[in-house]
Image 1 (cartoon, rainbow, N blue to C red):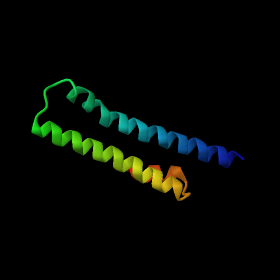
Image 2 (image 1 turned 180 degrees about the vertical axis):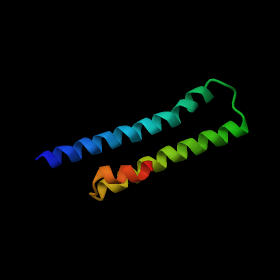
Image 3 (image 1 turned 120 degrees about the horizontal axis):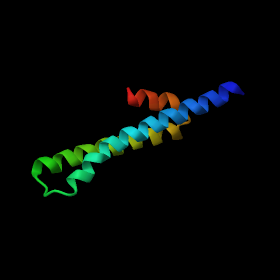
Length: 78
C-alpha cells in the first residue's frame, strides 16, 4: 500500500510541477495584454499558446492511454 501512495504522491508532485511551468508561460501573456500589440509580440503569444496546448494535449493523450501519469509528466518536464 505504501508503494501505491508513493506513486500517487509522485504523480501529484509532477502534475504540480507541470502546472507551475504552464503558469510561468502564462505570466508574460498578462503583461502583453496590457500593452499595444506588435507583430513580434503576436508571434511570441502564438508560440506560448502553442506550447501550452501541445503540452496539455500530449498529457491528455498519454493519460487516456493508461500510462502512469508520473512518468509521462516527468519526461515532458525534462
